[in-house]
Image 1 (cartoon, rainbow, N blue to C red):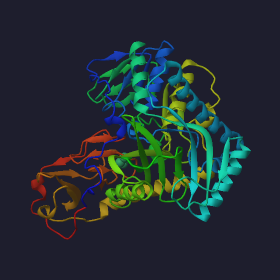
Image 2 (spheres, rainbow, N blue to C red):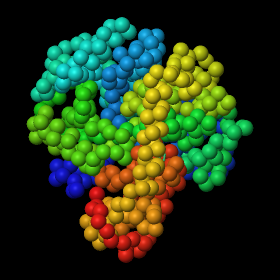
Image 3 (tube, rainbow, N blue to C red):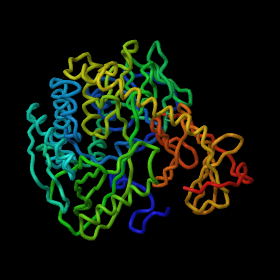
Image 4 (cartoon, rainbow, N blue to C red):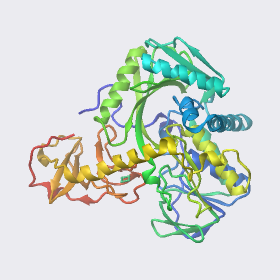
Length: 520
Ligand code: FES
């Protein structure tokens, strides 16, 4: 399948194309620090900012480049309205915990707003209402229940009949005075403050292990940073200890496009509650208004050709806005825990000096900030009202147990499926810019042919825990459905938890193989 004429050929997020970020060397020597933070997204950078401000000596390690993971691929809504969640939290966790969740997210929103306002940071911050809308009767009923939850939790919201778009909605629920911004402008300022406070930052430095006794972070090139506390902020944890995080989360992928249009945006940040998911917000690019349209969420490595998802967003944008000129497209990966609350806190009770923050369920702007605030308090020995809510060692029997079994059954099916299927085709028959699967000597291989006709062959067994990766044609990547690792078409790691590349092969190993399966 080819990229549509109206979609940009290469995926690139609007945020990263509109800012220059500082670059940092890789770690080449052993070092020591008070705190080592692994992961250069909103969580790691905010934590580095907060702790360096407290006088802690901080080292931040990033496997690739800062802000090139989920934070660089967000839609950047800063809100405590996280889809249909408060009614569910009241049912499963009780009113007190549901209210605590709302408070922690609202505090994170306030922290970002205050930091920007106090320091007068450039960030395109705008206060907006967040609005959920339902296009089916079934979800309109759910939205009514969500509104009841808002009232029970004293959340400032309103249930209305319509939204200012040509969409046939049954009802809509607003949460007042939330916000949107350009997250990389904001975080670029925090990076500078980390440096001003004496923090050290290293890019292209992959942490691979924590040595137990003395909290030493070990990197892939066998450098060591000894410290008192390790903060695992690497999206999927690079180190799990005995926390079994691989079995307690799944990865979802969603898509976004940014477009200039002739329609004036009516204000507000919108999210559909029924499927397929749709998200809307505006932004300002070089003084001109653009729209950011997101959605099409699905489990990573599963479902249809990923380009179809971009095309669905393109169609939706063309339905809503006059003459859209699509400037950017990108996709993001998010991790979802068993009970939909993030895991923030001690990685296990036996390693209290290693803290983890993960499972933000697509709401990383507030969850990442809330995580950084909580980790700061744990490291500094301060009380924090959300410590018990987010502790990774929690176990809420309902609905966790059922989900736990389902998540594992799902992972198991991918571990087995890849070993049994026998897809293959002739290498000559793959078109330019397409990929196909092969079987040779009982092993599954993936091959991608670029526009010049070069063929790149990889073993499709994920180097994390052995699931089989699937081709993502929208982004030209091999994606793992189990825990969300992503690899380039050459097999290089783009996103963990996998640390090692897919095994690469010369294309000649497939040359004599011909059989029935078609390319992707
Ligand atoms: Fe865990 Fe692939 S990401 S097996």
